[in-house]
Length: 281
Image 1 (spheres, one colour):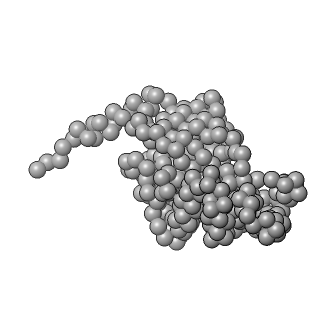
Image 2: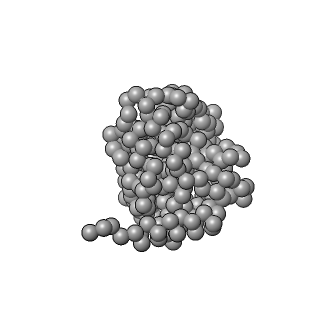
Image 3: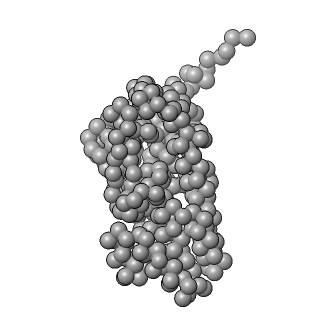
């Protein structure tokens, strides 16, 4: 990254750095790294079509970028789907068996009455299982997203699809520190599920619609702002925050989350008992 571009980003001047990089690509259209940088900037600003143009161009210029291009094409598609989920137009896929309470959280997204939507979420979260464990080796009794729309669920993108992954389905998550601008849109992560499955994917780094926020630091995921909705609820814009009974922590500061084995065993036993119950003929 050029020093001048880096300085503009630190100052939160996303619009200016995009124009700077557009000029750089015009002067060096055959340099893949210039187009990759512009692709990342367009992702931060939510200009998905333009982002795809430069992502695809970089893959043609640099064969080593082919795998990256495929992964992030899928992320962009997931992001478009995700926006419709939070507008109440689509329903998220659930990774694993949907817990009994999650339907209320999903239905609340399409509820036009904010107070009724708040009530639906409150009832759902009261019935959700608390997942105890550790985050960065610090114990917690429960964990959730700090955004009231999401609660004890993690948004993930796996194999080109957007999912909600309940924390109750997770055994471990490993997250590397952010390195590139695209990590401030989607953080790569490794997921180990209590079912034994192991997946590589992404966690959206920002809350829905952050790319359209007027504050460019929010769009850059350099800060989080909260808006009050309904009955004592708060919806986030900018960098994702996780909350436990002991702390609130940014996704960017999170390296490892583990769920306690005793909880894992109780979940597996519960699933086994449910499977053993046969319906009457």
